[in-house]
Length: 250
Image 1: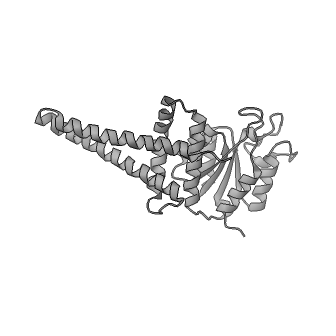
Image 2: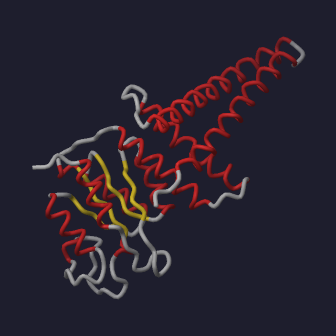
């Protein structure tokens, strides 16, 4: 089942109310504070605060409309995606205060991001798409390391790596396996893709989406039947459907 976008969206709307409160409070301070010098200083500070609050408010409204209408204006896309990335840490903190599980917020954020990426209607050559995988997809007892070269896999079928390699061969994609955020960023820099199709857990996908902006990242959550970071799996059908939706087929 797809994660609910309404979790992240609801927290964004709560953030909207907080922004409106900031604007009202800033104006109240400016006009109620005694003394012309203090008022002038507060006017400058309040003006900056109000500007960013209004900008954020406009962004939240546009994001909400875009998600509800399931389409995005190409001229406003970068602005909306920037607001989502900018507000994500704030939304996480808001979720903590409200005692909403962090992974639930992260899943919702990933789904919101994925919808915005889908709205781009991206169609690229297969070699410009990077399939980025976590090393925990590999069978934990396998002695053949695939982080430097995924083709070192012996295709035994005990994990999803063999099937994912076959997908990359079939669709002529680049594939990288990373052991963490630093190596994942390095892989993206080396591959220079136009789009990253990433498989990972909620935390790694969320941080990867933020770190890679403005490069679009489409995230697919891994499955953890044995717990985190060990013998994880991924829905191969979801991966293939995502690949087909973004590449120009030959």
